[in-house]
Image 1 (cartoon, rainbow, N blue to C red):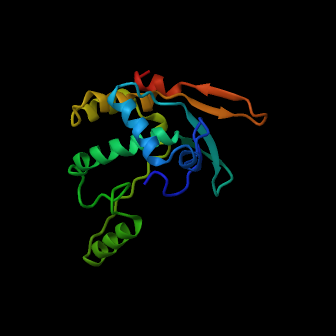
Image 2: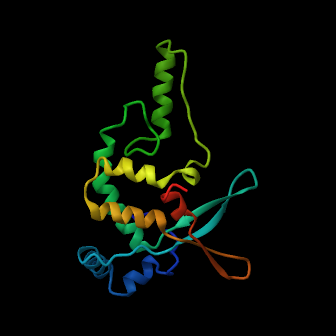
Image 3: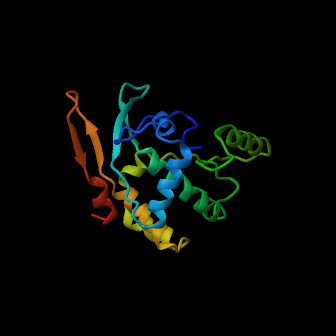
Length: 182
């Protein structure tokens, strides 16, 4: 799942090819599992790149390391069914086995049944302003495993590293301030 789209390497430069040539997936997963079991796992910095948008601006994209992506996917697999139970059938955004085409189909059916309104909300730059402390309280209301909560905090606090035009790296810890609610 993590490697489905190929994906660029994170800040550590590790690629899926280097994992294969370095002993393979099984060795990689075994080492990561050991870190998680021994509670020595620490998230790494996130590499920021900019993706051009159609309107001429650039969208920032954070690229975690492969080991962090694998751990995040494992946590997602555990958490998703718990939170999925809270969603309404009419909600489609970022949900498993749901897409925009299905949402349009539901809207079309509702309009054919004389529904006279449709609500479409897109919160611009929502994740840039999300207060992590509040998010963590909501998650902790449903997830009691302290290790999972600690990993999520690590991911939210991870520094973001960018390279300038000359290849110099600079790091930002702006997300840590949001976690504290500042």
